[in-house]
Length: 413
Image: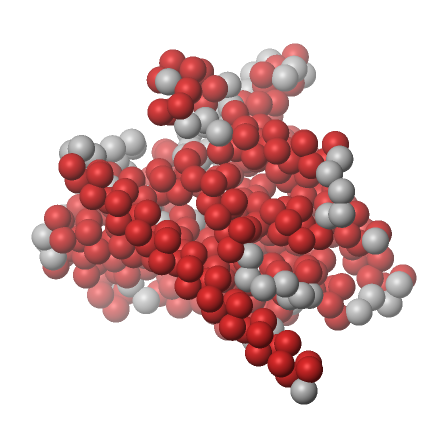
């Protein structure tokens, strides 16, 4: 009876804390949206690009290579994704903006609650109630990126949720379904293909089968609506658009290419071209390979438990998600893909750590670099200077390093 009573109490606390977080954040997001409208800043510029692309599709016009909205103004998602968002074009853009803004806000809330529970269960035995404190602190750290996600109306939080959901399915003995969900993520953002080598090393054969079936289906499905020839043309235009969008390795000041060049690699690579970028990616891939290989060796030598194997795999997966923004030429809101690692670190300091030391202060510094460049607090000039200096990328790298130390410490203890 006592065990059952504790279990019921834990579930009630989980529900209460999750609902409290959800209601408070919903109110915050509604207020933010109202303020955006009042100030004439309810733009959702990235959504506008997607909306125009969907409208062009329905009107039989060209989709790829046409500009619209802010930034590059180019639609960069796959034909499969285009079909998924095509219903937006059946409504007025004003209504679409409101619907999508609510959709993004709801996804942020649900994703964070979902990730906190998954991380708590995987790494900390779910011994504590749902971390309302953890959730709010994580929002505080990533607030600037969440703000931008809502403001421009992008899909990064949706992709993160799907990526974590795929992981949950894979670790929950539903590998085939998890691989299929991951295929959807890759079809939207091919950058996530970085996760596939991990599945190979971890011998997730069913997940890989589901992934490749999902990719094949996602590539073929648009033919039912576009025809085979037009579908091929669309995919060729999609690939060309992605290549055009990533012509410079220095467009993002926070990526490892820019940071490496600033900190001395320009003397080894006077011409920062494909060779330099390949060398940087190869170094990162080698370090990740060493990490995973070492985990596999430890599991084999110690005859690790199923829980240990799962926690190692989940951490490696989260680590790759956090690495993604640092190795791809991307926009600042993509640093949201580091949220699982941030929640993991936050959970450790709130529930797991017994004392504060140098690692705690290093973590604080990494969080300030990652999310402290708030325009309204620092002013335009200083904020722009810090962004051009690569502050987000430096913070992200420090977060990754901090998480590695924390995860290793938990393993030793």
